[in-house]
Length: 392
Image (cartoon, one colour):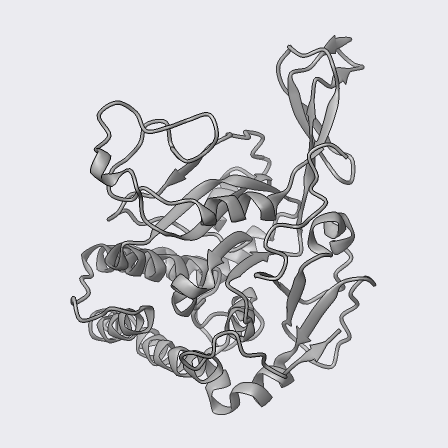
């Protein structure tokens, strides 16, 4: 098939982390891309339930019993009955790169020069979800060429090329083929900074909050924008965890998805909390975060009424949380991600606990997370294998 690689990129350096409560039939649609890689599946909810994984995949599966066994009392920092449990997979991975995806997300195929039977004309480009939904764009080409969209490969390209957090390039990512730094871009900054995070986007169901879902129940994202850009230093963003990759060696300990779900007063802020913490730390350590390509197809809209129940406190709290993160400063002595994160936990407790006692609990969990991370990833032994979980 045109455009698909015979040799997977970074086959032995990337783990794919998937949180789930259901059988992973969706992997069949990803088989051409995910089968060469190692999967870490974090089962949420009832640990007695059997999760079925299609044959042919190399994976480990961890349920709540495994998390409790491996972390002991420190398992309290891992959320229950919430997709935030995925961060346990980041902790037990021993690979340099992580790609995490939700189980309601699918790949799709590009069609260059696809002939439209309805219009009787040639189409410049379009895309088709594996299970058959098709969109087409503008008139143009004469020859149909099908190319399956490779999400993980694009994430890797983003992570392996530098970022430009200190000065915005108006042609977006200058390291992509066919572009460069524009006139006036300082030559002293063209070397860029290491990229820690690649934040991908989604077609079809947008990642909206509950109030927006209720106002726009039928809205769908059909705009595929072919660009990658660095989020500027000092600018926060709402990170979405459904299509996300990061360099675990550079920023792994900051990718804690907080306390959400069962027993907590808030949900659906797990990835955004991790994103705010990660962005502040990346800015301090001169690391970059890219957003844009790759896209996935988000197939399922969650219930807005259920979402509102989970989100409503967060909708109010974020009006104080965001100013907090915008004003955070980390001392020069914080030279590692762990140092930065522990300092951030102190500031969370000191400045956000007045909003709600939850933030005192969250700040303590942030410390527990770092302690657990360091126990499973002792310094100098990051590549050592962990003999836990049910390897398949």
